[in-house]
Length: 128
Image (cartoon, helix red, strand yellow):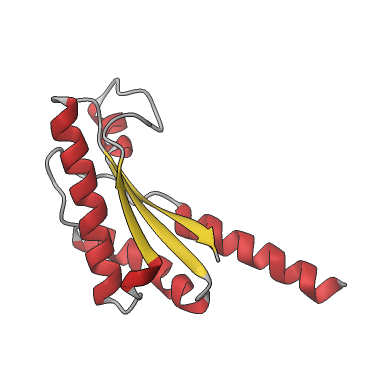
């Protein structure tokens, strides 16, 4: 009954925390900054506590530039995020990588502030 329900809620909260975007990439940046790594460190801790969570690193770009370039940059962002997870001890077999280019903005690309929000990596969780 009760304890199991609480456990489910905790898992959902952990999942939501991990899935918060790592944002504020500058236009052609693919390598995570120290701040972005700190952000990922919290997520890595949760991934270590939940070995059944598999991760899809999804890179996104803003709408500036040609889409083929955006696709490449967004994928590189996801790859570098994956490299960091692996360096920090997350098994490579748990991680896949996707680059979505500028297809899925979180907010309209109407200002530099918004574009920084859209330039992001998301760690999406897939349960085993």
